[in-house]
Length: 374
Image (cartoon, rainbow, N blue to C red; front, side, top):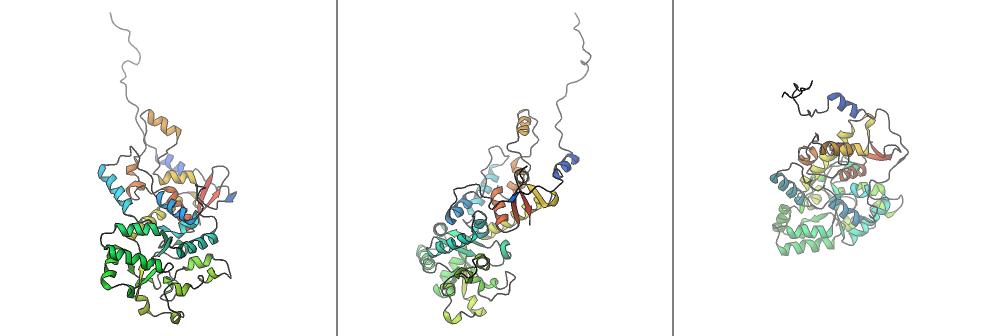
């Protein structure tokens, strides 16, 4: 007996085609906010952790929250995972002063606390000339003295006796970022320079684009720090005894020659080059993402999605498509966040840009917080 035929029996069944978004749909998303966002007030700090009370906590928090954890199914090969983890492990526990100010609520109180922690040998300021100007300079930052000790202890190029001698010298001069060459022998200086803990200060003159004397960059308090101090206070002139505590004799207070400056080496940290290169390229990329939007302002949630490579983590529609096997999301391993920045956290880069004065946060009242380019 012949089975009953259907009008659609001659048609072959086909699987649904996964179509990518067209250029028109992408352009529509880019221009979704065609008008200026409402501004109902500035946000003082991008910090989301309300338990941050002091500079030491902020420094530790910024170092531990620098990178996102590796996703479980991100498309990473074992070689790429090892490369990312080794790169992260090689970076110094350094944080810029701009980042610290971004996560604090009072610049004046923060600067005073930094000064007191430096005097107590709990904190150390690292100044690297030639890395930007003004508030956007990325070559000035802080490191906890315990972290500096740990990095020195892990160094294989410096013997134990030299390690202890170097630490004793740093404790004896807590406010100076420079080390006189007369304090160590030429062999000891060479080992410290090869290990990355000292660097030449010859390039410091004129590196900040200001009319400074050759040794100005070697003082314990930077120009950006002095500019934040209260008018008429000791901090506004560098603090009490700043010149003497920096290692300069009273006879040289009126200035120093180029030969005097060449006799001082700058305190540094190992692998500062890759760290600063990662920081500068990440800040540039974040600004580039904001410039795609009209009026150079964008809601924070949309900027975070762009930084993550267009991957919507909590989108219900995206999760439903994924459960049906229709997901067209890009794997994290193929995004710039992981290929170039090794999973650098969005909030960390945002704090760097806000603290350096490149961006500002504000409340919209309708789409939450937003950010604009200054």
